[in-house]
Length: 620
Image (cartoon, rainbow, N blue to C red; front, top):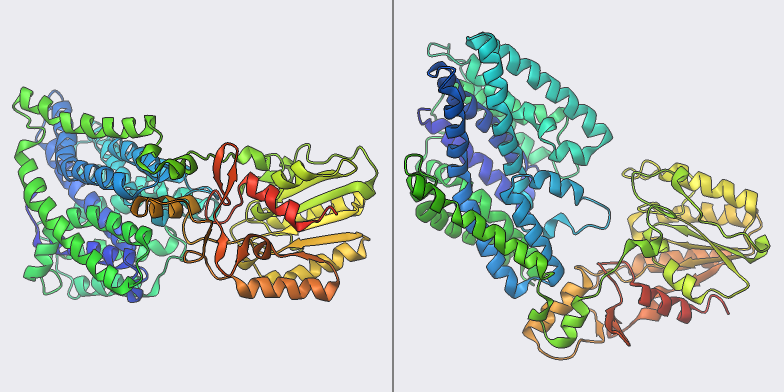
């Protein structure tokens, strides 16, 4: 297609919004809409390229033209992407923990296979690494686009063989786009994560761009102010939206429509024609590729001067993007996967296999824990299994209902000897310690669910089954009358004042002993990562305690303690047991080597759980 400066300028706007958003520039809290603008641009360009191929090809030559289309897309996307993967693998050797390095290898392989959107959707569980720590998370959009590139030629070719004119392409595009939009809105309400990552729920955004192509004609009538209206819609969307907005959803129509209006207007005004805007637009792909790993690295390093680090991150993004564009993107247009030289084509495949092989090697080596000093290396090998929580059986996943509780009660003795463990994952992490130290004359019943605190009558927005789970537990208490109930949760995430209603209910039902566990230490990063990175720069013994990476939760601790005093129930201060003024315990020394007190940012290891239960003296 003919190069259009206005579209190149729109690319600059899109990538600028995305970069500002990911570097946490407050005014552009909705900068993520830049990705949606990119989708519209892609749909417009791809429809144009494919339409010309259809109109200029016969039934015999069309398959070859479609293959050439795929190769051209690979030539555009892969070279800079391979460079990014290589650099992250090399740099990750020096500052990523084994778990993070292994996760990076997974991300590299799924990125090169263009299904990272599905991979990140599967990784979006309650205990998964924060998205802020996934170096290649932004490649989900590349995978969505590539999957769209696969489907669009097939759709347009099928329509073309049925009716060889653009009107039928327009009709098919409208039908597919409306279907995708309806599916997106449905999925946004039922499975928002799937709506975000799914190609089928995002296809309408790209098809909106395709629709603009079919509506555009050489003699189209200019609509005065259309481009300006589009840019104003994009700017207001970027300012007014934020990460808590349901996305994608019905409101996604506004930035998509805005991008479509700008492309349709074919204007080349001050909005898009400036030299700086054109410069950024030409490098928009490389800027997009490099900005996110740099933003993640800043969060992983956790610098004291965040403002300075952010400025440095943006500057480095521009530097890396310039190198990537000048040395890789421009040269690859002719050198990578050349269509008329078979040997050169095969040689061009070597970098793909090389980078993929690096990912496989890292996976096989389990992230290379031996990069670290001996004691830290032993710590890196620690593995935690959710089976210790009785995951999916007595610890419900977000999608499970109370009906999934199975064999969670042991009622062989009298009800007076039964202990009920009730709460979210911070109750579940007590189970290994309770089980190990449980007196012989007591039984344990466990009803725990992720993100579901033991607060009767409270609705948790992102845990639609929580209210019913707690109602089920309340009914079980009325029916079975346990002699003792242990309550625990990550209280700071909820309206913990509602704990009063749960305590009133338990006391009204005659529960003789109620124990509430206070907040556990919360680390700003995965504890083992903190310790391992410290060992990379300081080859000494592991620190017994650490306080610089703790998140202050004193208000919650004091509030829960006060409520328990009001109701005369037992309170266990987890922090008093695990922490001192010098910080909180980082690891326990066992016969099998050091074990971290937390296996992620907040959940106790089984060994730390046992240590806590012993020192809490709840069974004395």
